[in-house]
Figure 1 (spheres, rainbow, N blue to C red):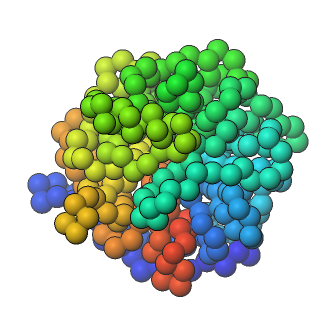
Figure 2: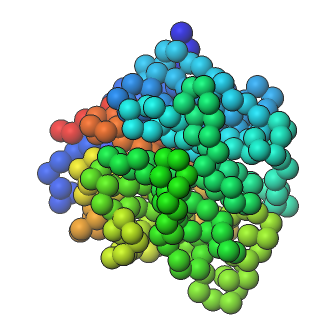
Length: 343
């Protein structure tokens, strides 16, 4: 058994105009060493796959654990860096991105001289599919190919790719064929999820508009990283049409995904951590729920550390997220799971 620790329940209170209260109960920690993130449910919500940098590894590898903390295991493939693992329909495959095509070592990444600056590297990832025995490389395009998630009913995936000097969203079949570009506006589009019905998508984006911002974005791409720019949450039809902006607060709003009702988006933001001493938003990311139609915003966590990567189970009864709330290892990001109760 992989030991897990029980965390005190968290009360999630909606705005005063709403008659419903959301509560997180039985908040449970599932990981206890290293830096961990992006935990995604399998088809029947019985387990999650996530990435973790641990065991003296210099880059992330993949791990799997049951939602009750049992049966913790390492992913059998270990060459290179890994990220963005996601189960297919019926758990036939696990999709993931890796640098395994470059060899066994962890590739070097850009390190900013400012230790306060939060950046995430754009490694030369390719997207793969693994069925437990065979590995199939789905992309073969030099640069960043990652952030893969699946369509709820069709054998399609949506992913993020750096092609032709910009980062956009694309869709392809489970075998890597029939690639279709979805977004085309200059800037960063990433982290997309299909809606529960599969007819819409949500993602995070930043579109530089001034000469200074465009220079900043060009510099990011040349050094292969993305910094904490004022990202916003967007929804659109599956093909990218009827685009709607949900946030516009100057903060970094990211890691969006759908509530199973198809009417709300859960995401992470530092919108409530404005730092007068730095004249900028800080590093305290909280989790929020936004109504797509009314834009009503609900703060779901109230913590003084990082909370992000929220994902609901398919029935909406559980939620996974990544957090620095572990008091024993406050510098590490760990995986948590909680029951979602409506009262």
